[in-house]
Image 1 (spheres, rainbow, N blue to C red):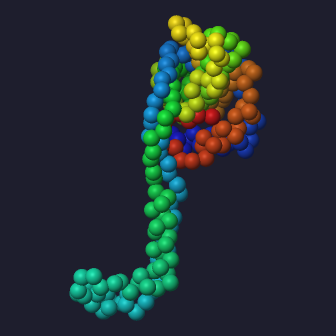
Image 2 (image 1 turned 90 degrees about the vertical axis):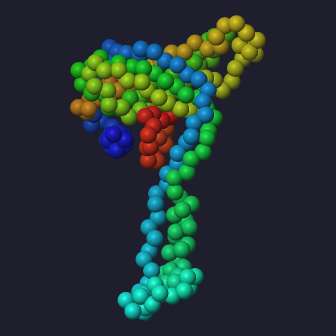
Image 3 (image 1 turned 30 degrees about the vertical axis):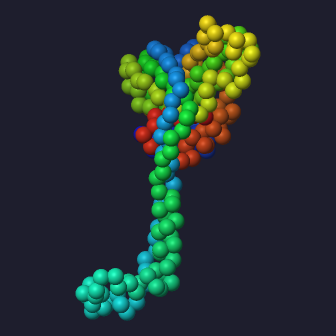
Amino acid sequence: MRTLLLFALLVLFVSPLQRAALAQEGPSLSVLESKWYKSREVVEKLNDPVLVPAAAMIPQNKNFERNRRENSPEGVRDPNLDTIDGRAAALERSVQESRMRTTKPVDGFAFRVKVKNTAAKVVEVLFWEIQFKETANPSSIARRQFLCGVNIKPDKEKELKAFSVLGPSDVISVLSLSNKTDNLFEENIVINRIEFADGTIWQRKGWNFGEVRLGIARAVGTPWGTEMCRSL
């Protein structure tokens, strides 16, 4: 699924005019419910593996010498390690170990949205956002956009799960901070773009795909793990 998502997005980068957007009044996904909360999640990082070159062929590699080493006392150093290729392989191996999959806890926010596919075809890729409008200052609106690789069949529901280090707002007015009773924000879920399995696309009028190209490049620039969505 993640490979298909990456391939589809690469096609969009290469030739965005090859796939026409559908003419529709509204998206064929209905938002059933949503929630967000502070969260600490383990972020997984995976770098490309490094191939370790084979050691050079030396006389000790012959059967006779290899059998002799197998019968040597414990602790005898392998002569392969002292060759140029052997030392280079050891160095490359240490580099490879440093590039292995690593994880670390990150503080941020979890966003969950349940949607239903009301179209007659499968949804594969979804762009959506959550908008936070400051109650005491309606002109202050923060947008958190996400890209999801999904497989939602017709008339089926799915919960989208996303994580971001960014919360509802970067700046909060003093008036909002002084309000202890009401909610600080009004939340709104917006579907920006839907890509279907048959290659067709629905895109919200007024939403600019070009504005998130750099975000998409970052989102698909590293291998996807088990996550469903990535922040743009």
